[in-house]
Image (tube, rainbow, N blue to C red; front, side, top):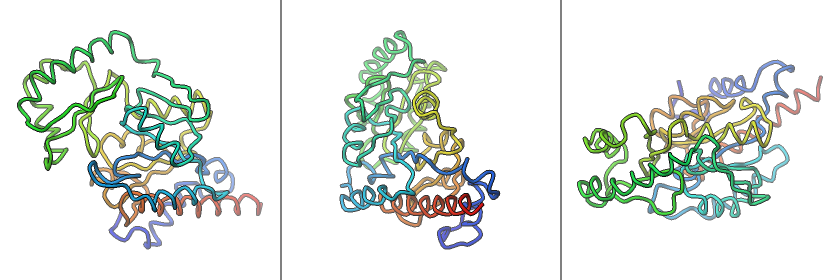
Length: 287
């Protein structure tokens, strides 16, 4: 179980290395080839706080190291937001937005809608959005539906209300139970409640990228997340990490915890990935 000074703890560093495989036969197969990053809470602070531009610039420079995994994004944010961050960070690997509903290839600019999403799902979501706006949100002054989402609905909590507290109020609201039932997936990120079509989540989007576009085993991939909706990916990848601002449930699940928050923590995590990839290369070439 991670400790507060996880970075400096030799036992945990050993555990981190063992996640890649301890024998030469396993090392090359489990090298971290791609590192998926969430946006809110990982690349940027929570909603409403300015991004650390210098830290993002440092992350871009660090990603140019020959032993760095390629960077990708998995986020609940809208497609234009994802495209902007891919441009800022120089990301060329297909990435995921709207919690697995949409895949975007920064190189070709191709937009791929998750093939599991049916037209009837989108029709129901459109009606659901109006019902939530008219009947549910008036009960929670200050709560808002995010603009620009195509295949999901995201609801921001009232200002100064904890997202986890708001989530539990929302899912237990009688109108929400009557409307949604078991027809849709509900989860939350650091900044919003997310409603998605059935069986659509971040892992579904990541799996599509890895299996259909990159042809890379998920155990050769890392992910950095901070909230409940990231857990489904963090529990499957070969290497998982979070920053100091990650939720307690995420910290219990990951391989590595940085002592730094947001983008600074992500830099620390990427440095550790590079360090381990260098060790992998040395082990393989020494045989």
